[in-house]
Length: 588
Image (cartoon, rainbow, N blue to C red; front, side, top):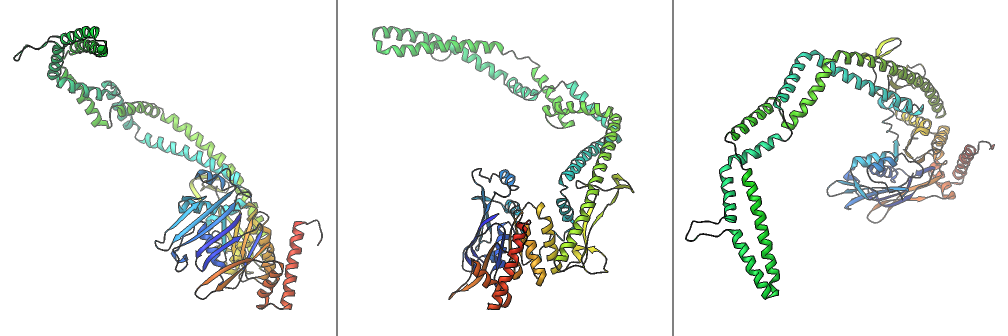
């Protein structure tokens, strides 16, 4: 539920701090005082489009922050955990949004961490649900009617089973389609695959072979230079050189002489012992180097035609790569997969027959479960229609007829069902659901979206919400003047139904009806205050006597003893009804 709301520099609101209660929170005040601005702020907080016009004139930015308790509902927790926004030690979540006047851009944060607007919208949508007299978009969108019906009838588990079976069937059909397509060009494909496997097998490819050949080719192409360098190094170490003005001594001989001289010196002067040790180490290292060079020289056995054989092998590899694409490793992998495909194509008729048998069994099982779901929907739809007609009668619309229309669309590749060759299906089942209404006696039922007027839609939305609230997982429901066009006894019924929703939800309602406000568990008054140069919105929680004055003003414009008496009577009647609902065993 929403615990606190803070709004700063938003429209005509400079500073507003609202602490909300559980149950039924009512906001009242004169037209233009800023009640709907609070709803706009809540909409912005839950991820709706941020408009730079919301920034208070003369201010650099607007900010809205809401603190929500997670004690009552947990459906949002997996989403917060998915995005790494949930702290195990906290039982609250804080949503914040700022709108810059200069750039027009907004910044959204959840628990202090910046998030995209889409994430804010996803999280906010699970915390707040806002309904206005002209809202009801989901109510008038036939695509949502099926979800409403299933939620009301608690049919989600059965619907989930249908979705699972549809997934299995679609995978089977995809496999069949691929096999049938392959079957149509099976011989051609088998020939292609066999050419590939035979060419790769004949070439006897090895992983990494091309890289090895390229390295060896580079060595063979420089054979003379490599041999000369190795011989020169070995000669300098072991034989010395005869050319030049004076013959040079072998390095090993010179190092041996130096090591001997330094050894004699160390006996005479022990302080140079470490230098003698270094000389001995160098001598031993030079000997090791000579041995390694000798082994390397002996390994340099370049065959005269080796470069030709390397080039021939590289030509074979590159011809295969040009023909089939990819490097050597890719060719080896393709050949392995081609063998598996050859086996599958060779026995494709058996595979197709097995899959067709599997498809028939899956169709039968899916049809059985989908028909069961459809039958339960029909029963739930009749129950929902009866309950809505009763609720609309309570709301002073006794002549409303409501119906849940269920249709099926024939489709050649659909599900076999009684009374039809086959019908279309998807993961929701086989039904196309739409709410139908007849607002006046004698008129036929027509689609809800084309019939309901503003007042009718508001009351329909309230009737649906009051009936579906037990299945609605959003903890906080907000109603913005949903009682427009309602008066008298119907106003009291609106209040009763809004308060009844608080069994499972926190409800925040803006109203102009005293009969609705009388049911408030917490009543806030919104007012517009004027100073010398600015206008601002203020909010205050009303006490018992202040509530009486507020309802009296709503009844009669200016509170009087008569209107106060009426207000007391309305509040007393609402309080008695609420007490009776909390304690039905006690007569009131």
